[in-house]
Length: 313
Image (tube, rainbow, N blue to C red; front, top):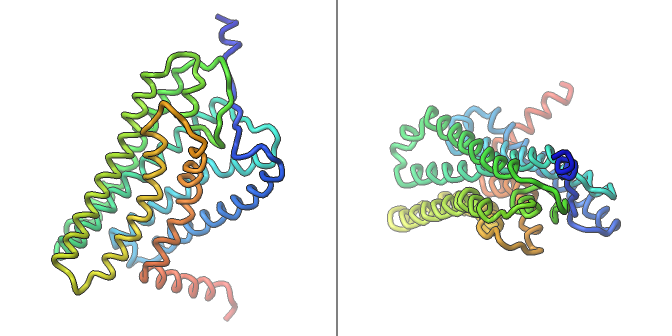
């Protein structure tokens, strides 16, 4: 038993995005800029929504503030470690650190998927039942929906950690990625992982697919309703829906691709992982602010207020 315990893997080696030192330095600079954009953009949205009382009272911006907070946290789970690894020859992560990445990645990722589904319901009520919108989407319901997203995300992530922590790892310890995730980690286990992979599909894969289909169905209903009832005032509603659908596609397509087919892996998986953990959190603030007049107006007010505090009278 002691010999078996001594042979258990205590850390994993991350192969990263490239083995070339020159390419790694280039990627370090690129992803450092991406990470700065993620932090600045999402933090700006969170602060703007919190400071502007009018935006905070709106259910859509209340949800948007939480979405930006999730994106901000999600990027912090993987990107700082990846940036540090670009400057090191040996890219390792401890077993406990690997479990922590899996936990927070799935906790925040599942919460974001569910929050996007809630945001689709919010747009459905606002467009299809505008007279009762503020009555239906009252502050208490908004809080309960966000709280439910966090709770389900917590349950989902705990399930993922349980799937991994029970497995023995005594063989190869190289992960062909820049962070720890369940599909790559379970393939290093010393036992048959068929049942675990099926459970992963039924958990992560189906969660991603079901939420994605519900979202597409919801926006299809919204678009049909707009076409048949509000031909004269479609512009703003269509713009909002287009922004939401863009974000939904950037998040759900990589997740469905990665988690719905566990028995094989492709080199393109790293590209989808980069989109999910870096590119999407960076693009979300641009997508929501560039097409949203209310957010741009509030940001201008925030900028003037900041300048007023910094500059002397």
